[in-house]
Image (tube, rainbow, N blue to C red; front, side, top):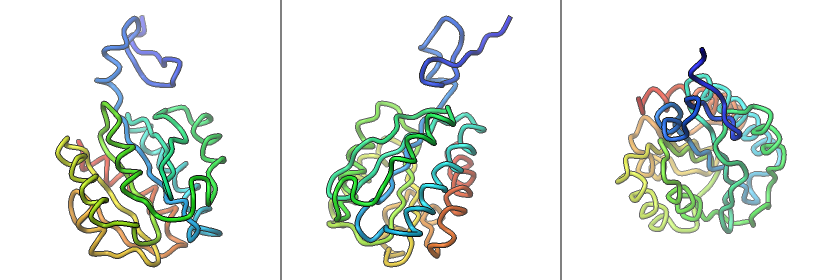
Amino acid sequence: MALLRLNDQGRLCLKGGQAAERLLIKDVLLLIDTSGSMTGEKISQAKNGAIDFSRTAASRGYATGLAAFADRAAMVCDPTVERDVFERKVAGIRVGIVGGTTDLAAGLDLAAKFQTLSAVVVVTDGQPNSEEAAFAAAAVLKQRGIEILCIGTDDADQEFLDQLATRKDLALHVATNSLGTTMQNAAQLLLGASQ
C-alpha cells in the first residue's frame, strides 16, 4: 500500500493528510527581476534557468514558486513540483510585466508573506531602487531562518549582493550568458545549504 501521493498542487504528501505535507516538501521562491534592463538574453536566460532550477529542486523534495519584481512584485506561480504547471507559468514572464524599475524590497516583502518558506533566490542585473529597503526586507526573512541566495549580472553590485545574501558564498555575480546555468547550479548550492 503506497503511503505517498501528489495532491492537487503537485505536492508530495501522505495519503489522507495534508498536515504531513509540510514535512515532506519545502518551498523555495525564485524572485526574478523583470525591469527594463532585463530585456533580450537576460530574461531568456532567467526563464530557462528558472525551469532548470525547479527541476533540480523537485528532485530534492522542494517545490518552486516564481515571482516577478520591478515597480512592484507579483506572484507568477505558487510553489509546485509539477513541471508542466511551472513551465507554463514561466512562459508568461516578460520584461515590464510589473513595471520598469527595480524595487527588490517589494519582492522580498512578497516572499515574507509565505507562512513556510525555506529559501529565496534573487535574480537581478542591477541596483535596487533602495538598498536600505531591500536590506530591511531581507532581515525579516533572515530572522525567520529563510536562506537568501543572490545571482547578479551586469550592473549588480557584488558588495550589495554579499550583504543581501544569507552568506557570502550564496552571492553570485555572473556573465549574462551564464545566468541560466548558474541558476540551475544554484539549486544544488542552496538546497545543500538549507539541509
